Image (tube, rainbow, N blue to C red; front, top):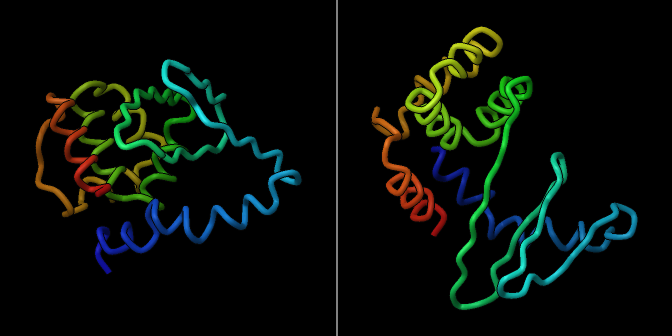
Length: 143
């Protein structure tokens, strides 16, 4: 099974249809919070909180920023390599471009995950200098 097939079989649509209803049934037990974000509002999601977003309007623009602290990078990257190798390959490519010292840190503490991401044949080698291109690629993949 290809990475793409895995993504389709277990992607966002699958999650909302198959996983979310079970979690919602246990909302009180899990401490789940559900809300509607209105135009102009911002939501802060603390580190370590699991979250999901469902856009319910015809047109939605979202800006997000994720921060992975240096000490958490090996664990976060290894996890992504295991559960979403397409993302891990792209992440590594961008790290090589923007933060070579982070790649050195990863090679030291998570060499197997880095080696696997470098050998992934999902995408050809390339830079990560144009963030718009990377964003468009991710958006197209999620259609």
